Every structure is written in C-alpha cells, then in structure tokens.
Image (cartoon, rainbow, N blue to C red; front, side):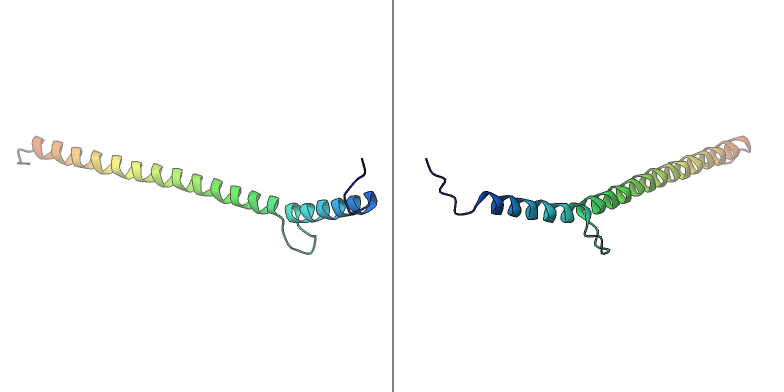
Length: 87
C-alpha cells in the first residue's frame, strides 16, 4: 500500500520541528522580552496568592475591630450598671 501523503518524510519532520518551536515560544516566550504562557500563569498565581493574603488580613482586622467594639460596648454597659445609670 503506497503512502498517499503528498509530503516527504523529511518535509513532515521539518513541519513538526517548526510546530514544536512555535509551541515552545508560546509557552516560554521568544527571548525578546515577550513572556510566554507559563510565565504569565506564574504571575497570575502570584497575584492570586497576594490577594488571598490581603483578604485574610482584611478579615482578621475586621474581626478584631468588631471584637474591640463589642468589648467597649460591654464595658460601657457594665460601668453604667455599676454607677446606677440606665441602659
């Protein structure tokens, strides 16, 4: 059975080599300052990590403020009760 492909084996290998080089440039960049997909995904992951820590810090601070305000409210209530005032 004869091969019906119009390209020779050498041509097919050259085309595959070219395609692999293009995929490599897309993934890793071309070396001229253009960053590839892998570098961009790493940057996105770093940004997501920073966002996660910022969210945790914000929630911790918010919880601390609520706890402080609750304690101050209880202190006020206790002081008012001790000195005979009304709520």
